[in-house]
Image 1 (cartoon, helix red, strand yellow):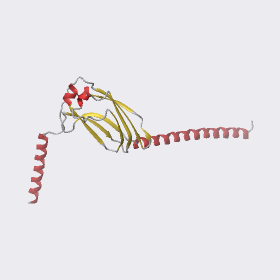
Image 2 (tube, rainbow, N blue to C red):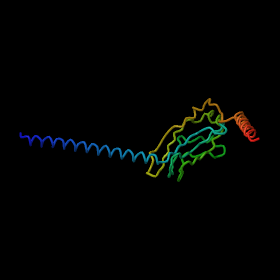
Image 3 (tube, one colour):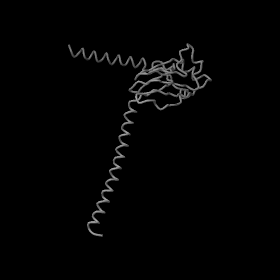
Image 4 (tube, helix red, strand yellow):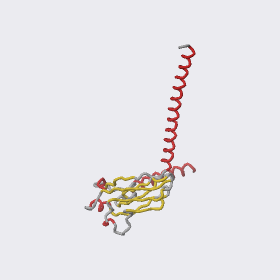
Length: 188
């Protein structure tokens, strides 16, 4: 084999290797672009959840809460609670959805339904575990259906305290009074 033929073979091998590397890089770039697009879409989707929680101001009461914490409007929201919340939790008939549809939930929308006294609900012999399935549509199409369990047995023995106390309020007023007195003394 002549020197020119050897050089041609080496050049062909280098060109083939370069072509394989270029295809590999193009595939990597395509995967990276797809991943970035998926991240953008996921970040723009609504995030809708349902929970049973103690009241923020008076922890003796339970509420059913539905909220969209995502950055965009959730449309065609469908919520299924299985088994349905017990009828005994409906003293005023105001308990929220068992299976409900909402045309839309804008970002930050919180819907709250009163369930009753937490101690009564936890003490009942009714079902205490509920599977919640939420489906909705966001700006990039249908969201993946999300199913999770609400387990009220975790509240058995739970201390019923709302955040803040009167002693905390009194301390804050005392601190504020000291600051006002200090500020007033500095001006005279």
